Length: 378
Image (spheres, rainbow, N blue to C red):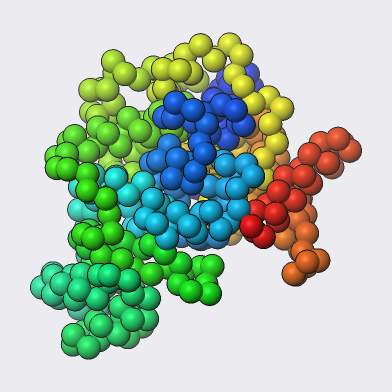
């Protein structure tokens, strides 16, 4: 849910939105703010953003694909298969695609708070720290080598004497994951939605000593503003699932390496390379067909810069945590889109918030929807 809208002028809103497009690698030919050159692999895309919301895996794959024009779904699955991209519970209690090199740092910052938020549910399910510790050893052994399906991992938990009835099995998997023991890697054979669980100790790359919690927080906060900026401290705290105070302190310590702008009563922080783009921000003519849950919209607590408040419930119907696919033109969300038909007859259809766009703009949007269909086939 968005907070109260920023009190920005139309010019300021458009500038912030378009600089975010550039920061996130959504403008062809302009590298994401954290990359020296445009992304060429799925790993580049995920590394540029640090983490990407991914509870809906097929849509998360398109979130990578839309930032890598011309690639196909198979390339994203290949990145999951070779470990250059992983999926895990990273922040806010939801699944994320992340750069595997960030795994330890991310859990050092977020795991304690996520565990605290889940304490009540675990108590209701009679899940104890001792049981989690015991099953962490079970998972480490079962997921070594070629990994394990969700069903195989749950069966191992059951064989070890733990109940997996109802949602208890799911909560056990999350608890073990937050201990850094397992991550999700290659796709299960024949599935586009389920992945194998892999033992983190053998699956993740060697990265040397992990930074302490303060160092990890500084790294994640800097990465957020460079990859998502211009954004506010409140946006970053929401993204990480942390209170404002530690994030504000981390931003203050990063003052020499982040640029700030006072707009509409808020302070926006962003990467240094955007300093000279304020006057002429790129992306005015950009047209994008974004997945649901995309970082361009979901990566901020206040989304009113790109999505007017009067249209928010169209994108998040029922306010139940579901984000529909959207069309962004010049950094502004102007429509939702969906798939119709099946098989070779499947097509994309967009639903504008207001009047139908002109013929030229409609052709541009249709071409972006066709690009998604091609992505699904490759």
